[in-house]
Image (cartoon, rainbow, N blue to C red; front, side, top):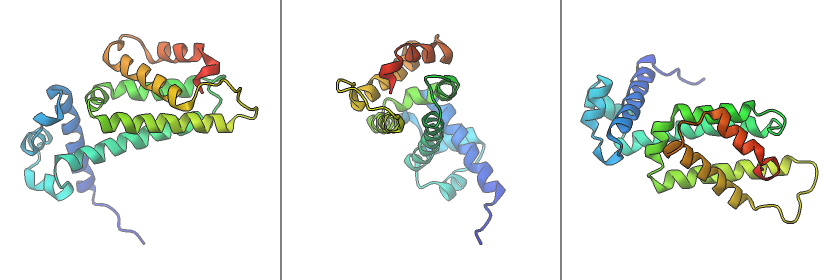
Length: 181
């Protein structure tokens, strides 16, 4: 029998997560964060912070892991549907990126984040290709290049093209159906 987690603990972690996301958006840099700033924004104290996290990097790791878990779930939904016929799952994935765009824009400054997202997209593409019933043509673009292309689209969208909706970006990806996956 597993122990049920204390609701206060869940609430505190949620408040710290929201505080660090807000500060990252405002500050624009991880290097400007301090435990005191995060605790003040969360309206909690430093001692509570250290009950849940070793340091700021631990909080960022856990927050980023939660984001990646959510992205992975959205990509898993895409793998299980035929995106070529139904673009709704793709739009849901892009909506999630868009809703968290400010946080992602800051995280893209970290090379490890970019590499992790690239690997996730590459795995998604390989899974989609493996699920296809017909063999792939010999001249098919490699999954590495395709993942880098999707990364480029997402990074461009978040940094320079945010005026475009998730639907528009999905349509642009959709236009080149045979090369997406």
